[in-house]
Structure formats: structure tokens, C-alpha cells
Amino acid sequence: MAKIRVETTINGEETEFLCNGQESLLEVLRDGLGMTGTKEGCTTGDCGACSVVVDGRLVPSCLVLAAETGGRTVDTIEGVADGQTLTPVQQQFLEHGALQCGICTPGFIVAAEKLLEKNPNPTEAEARYFLAGNLCRCTGYDKIIKAVLDAAAVMREGRA
Amino acid sequence: MSAPVSRFEAPTEVEAAVALLAEEEGARVLSGGTDLLVQMRLGAGAPPLFVDVKRIPRLTAVRLDSNGLRIGAAVPAAEIYENDEIRSLWPGLAEATDLIGSTQIQGRATWSGNLCNASPAADAVPALIACGATAVVAGPKGERRVAVEDFTTGPGKTVLERGELVIEFEVPAPAVHASDAYLRLIPRTEMDIAVVGAGVALTLDAAGTVESARVVLGAVAPTAIRVPDAEAALVGSPLGDESLSAAAAASTAAANPIDDKRGTVAYRKKIAGVLTTRAAKVAYERAQAR
Image 1: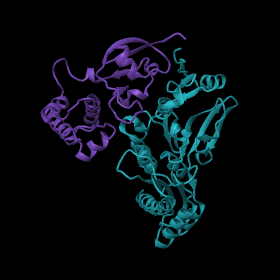
Image 2 (image 1 turned 180 degrees about the vertical axis):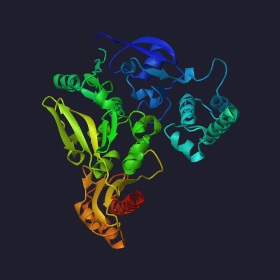
Image 3 (image 1 turned 90 degrees about the vertical axis):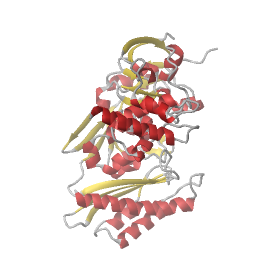
């Protein structure tokens, strides 16, 4: 069967790729487009490592078919930093040492950016619930949550 | 030999989706994919054809008017519970929707998927039944309306026939003094499957007497079930200890659960009564406050 040709916008750039009907967006990002920032964890929507934003919604890219994304906008971890300039979320992950092995980190960053876009001043409980779909087996989560809450504070001060 | 390759179609009209589903045996509707693609990864294999229904305008539309809500079957959970009007008119239904999976899953998962996957523990289903929701089904013979309470016939089984799909839900507007609540028990605080779920919708008169009640249990029978005896126990008086304990006893009696790692039969039956009581209290307070 002929491959499906898909035109989509990834991190603001018009992108074209070929895929099979059952290929996930995660597979195409990593294996087709070489965008390996998005990580593969469980492939069943449980771990959050593959989190991306499609048309403004935080989604697990393992449970999105690549063919679905025609004409839509996809935002991945590669589009978060502005060149060499890190966002406050990324910077606070570094300051707090909020990662060890790093596999969960891109998913956490993408999800945390979405949280702070929706809610610039989350409580700790709100942050923990929003990020409950991102699993980390190294840090015990405390440093991650502190990084996210401090990033929120930095961003609020930046706006003031 | 390479693995078989699935076709992928994204029709923009209901009729085209119906034709695709009717022509290809084993074709599957793709809305959120949070059950379908997981089942595929866990060994069910890829279907011969995915029919992505999210390009059909009717399936992503949200319309609220004095009659109530008419909402496309492919609207994701997050869009539903982020809608302030929906939250205010059907808080229990919004709560149930907000309980399904993680933020990421909620960006994809839909009521129609929750209903058509036909898990006895589906969280949105008891809440939809409590609110008197109807599923609009399109198929080769046209459209038909099926009450959500009549839709699921057993675990993994529904009334849908080949070529049919759910296209919309209708949720009637609540009366002046009416509201709903949904509670579930899980062994952790987030991201788990219901051990027991209870949805209650109450309509009161101006004095606070319960005029009508719908009590629905999830995860304690092959499908979500209404509990007519609990509903009858709540109707006719303001909510009080007597009517609440009668409703709890009715729910405990009606529950017909399985024993599994999430809970024993005796525990689930007990909790069915407890959650009925608690959900009824929440729905009552909300109905009074409206």
C-alpha cells in the first residue's frame, strides 16, 4: 500500500513526511524526522515521556497516529527553547537538578510549559495533579515540582 | 513478510464515515485512540482501516442552549471539563470526565470512546446516565437515538451494528433546582480504574423535597446500572438520614460485582452504598445552591 503523505506544521515549520496508516506520531518524529527529543516510554499512554502539543492540546504522541496530524500544528520539546536561550522551566530544572537519567524530562518540560500557560500560579497540589501523567523513576518528583513552581514564580515576576 | 499496513481515512462528512465503516470489515473509528491504539499495542493488531472522525464538523461541535447540551462525539475530555457552562450545569458529569486518565489522555479521550469501549468501570458512563444523556448514532439506515443507559450490553459489547458510530451526545438541561455528582473509589489519589463509581442526579422542588432522582453505579456489574430502589428511596422527602440509608441499602443490594485485585464482592457492595449516600448529598447541596 502506498504511504500516506502528510503536511503538517512542527514547531512552526511546515513539514512533510510519509507514513503508514498505523504509525504513531511518536514513531514519525523520532524515526522518520530524527527529532529524538521526544522520548518513547511505555507506548500505551501511561508514562508521559512522549508528551507533545497538537493544536494546543497536551497529548501523548504514542497515541496519536501520524496521519492524523495533516494540517495541524505539532509542538515538541525541540521547539521549547528559543535557540540557546532556555525557558524558565528549563532553567529551573537545571537549578534544581530535577533530573537524573533524563528520559522523562522532555515530557515533563512540555507538560509543565502547558500547565504554566493555563495556570501561571499553580498550587503544589495543582501542579502534581496536572503532571500526574508524567512518570519519573529517579527523582521522587520533589525536585521536579519545586522546579515547576519556581519557574512559575520567575515567569510571574518577569511579567510584573 | 512485513506487518500488514492499515488504511487511514479522515472523512469530513458523517455519511462518508458510515460508508467506510460499512464497507471494510474490522474498520475502527478513531477519535482519541486512548483505548483503540493501546489495545493495538497490547497485541490486538492494527485494524485494516482507521476512520479518523475528528474532521467531521458535527463530531467536534459544542452547542449549548435552553434545551441542554448537544456535543460532538469526538470532543476530548479536556475541552468538556474546561467549559465553564458545562461545569456549572452538570458538575458531576464534568467531574467524571476530569477523572479519566492523565492530562495527556484527557487531551484525546472522548465520551464516545469511553462508552463504546464498554468497560464496566468507565467513569463518564454512570454520570451520563444520571444526567439522562442520549447517544445519537449514525449508520447505513440513517440516524437513531439511544439512551446511554441502554447502549452497553455487556463488557466490551454495545448496541452498535456494523457501519454505525456515535456522532453526538444530547444532555437535557437540568431543571431549576437540579444538579448532579459523580464519585468513584480508587486505591490511590489519581490515575486509576474505578473500584466503584456512583453518579447521582437530583431534582428538587422549591421547598427542597426531592422530586426525582437518578442513581447509577459503575464497576459493580457487567454494565453501569441504574438503581430504581435507591431512586425511589430518595424521592418524596428532603434528603435525610432515613432516605439516605434506604438508598445506600438499595445500592448495596443492586451491586453485582466481581472479585478482583481492586476489590472483593463484599467491599464493592458496601462501597456502592457509601458512594450513593455521598454523591446524593453533594448533588443535593448543589441543587439547593442553584
